[in-house]
Image (cartoon, helix red, strand yellow):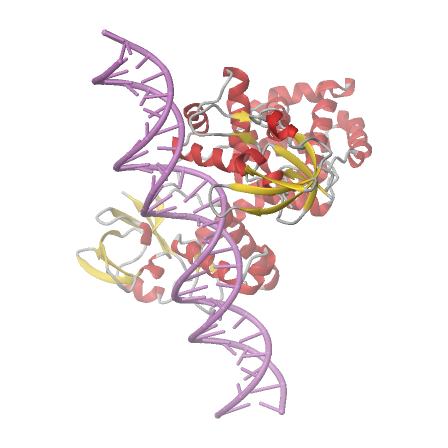
Length: 231
Length: 231
DNA sequence: AGAAATTGTTAGGTTAAGCTAATAAACGGT
DNA sequence: ACCGTTTATTAGCTTAACCTAACAATTTCT
């Protein structure tokens, strides 16, 4: 009962192997590692796994060869990739690289039906007479739509329990769900207060912090309810 | 340096929690487990992880509450989900359940830009005057496009090394990359031959198989090159 | 041909996410 | 108010996918 299904990660390896063989004639461990941005031992591992599943012919120190099953499977995977890529670049007008990366990420979880229907959609929009103005619209509108998070805007607001020792920060918000908010407020833990983490207690999940000169302890569970911003 | 990014799995938990709280008022471990199809201890684990990251307020045996950060994040995730779902059901005409499942699978790896552009595409096709005929086309064509693998067509063709002991099978194909194909062919290992696995040798990676009355051993590496079909 | 550089593998560790079995807490009916 | 049922947690194991460090094999250069 082999189920013809392999993990996303192995699919990536198989796809990479097929492509490297196609362009360079043979896939070396190092090439695969570079392409997938992993270290060589990870590749060796993956090759063994693919071999056990009968998808490649692998023996130490000799070139990897796809078996017929492996080649077939690689073809399926590459097809998925290329359909997705042309959706992202052709309709959503993502640039080459981003279309490719996005396709990579979702190619492992897309079924045949979705894929075929995507092809229908792509071809309808690309080919139909009556879609000419839609095509113009997409061409001009899509490239203007960019909403990637400003990268760093919220990035340095973190919960107090994740604040590194010694780093100083300002209280941004104390969550209303923290039990005993009032008590903490009395101690000075209100938005705007500058504080520093002195250290973590070895056991008991305690955090020692320094607030306005004096220091106090609180459980790191509770600290999670206090958001601070690095200064 | 908290990076505001959590794993796909934790995103699933967060999304589930937000939805359960919304519909039932409070999320119990059991509800979450059922919704995500995992066992309760896995939920407990996840809750602890979310708690450490300051996304929920969690203490043993008391109801889970989203922190403000958590609620915000859940909203983002649910938004991704709903956009994707409306793409799959509105344009590709997948049925409710499948649209939902597909959205679930890819919502974790889609960036903001792609999402916004999807919205543009969906709205353009749904709203533009000049897309009326495209809408008709999609409505009638999509539902007919179904290519889900026949489920079981190729499923019981497996490499010989994965054949369970005792199970009998027929050789379907011997890969041309197997070294010494000829030798094996002489022993009767050609397409059409009926065989059975007698057992695996404790060490040495050997497989003992029975072919047409006589028995022979081969390395399981090599067996991977022989595809058999269960009978 | 043999030393040096490159490439590949093994051994063993880490993390995330799941699981089962055992234990503990909370709830609900009499 | 108790006891059994239900729900939740802890402890400890498994697997997949990665990693580093150490070792082994293969090329390349002279």
